[in-house]
Amino acid sequence: MNKSTTIIIIIVALFVFVGGAAMYSKSKITVPVAIEEITPASDDAVTSQDTSDNALDQDFATIDAKLKAADQDATNIDTGLNDKQGDLSEQ
Image 1 (cartoon, rainbow, N blue to C red):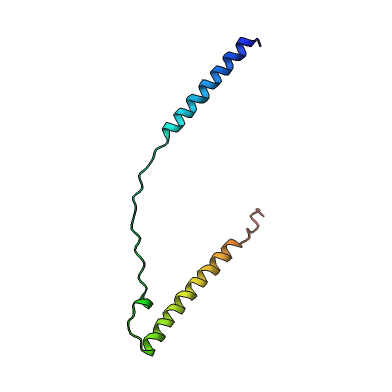
Image 2: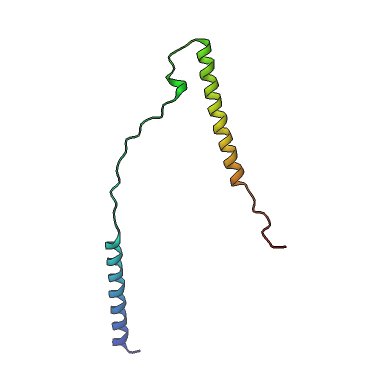
């Protein structure tokens, strides 16, 4: 190749690259995101104003049940993450 052919190929490649970059940057569509206010979840155990022993025991039982459910969920997640693939070969 002579020098002028090489220069023309480089110029065409630059035009293609710059044109592609310009089209790519214009093709990005921005979607406005709505901001939602986060409201704290109500917790039955916390809203109780009754401080009698029965009410406190009931509140503690509710908290224990929620913690046990969360622990069970974590255990299930751990089991799923440690799951091994079985033998899928045909027999």
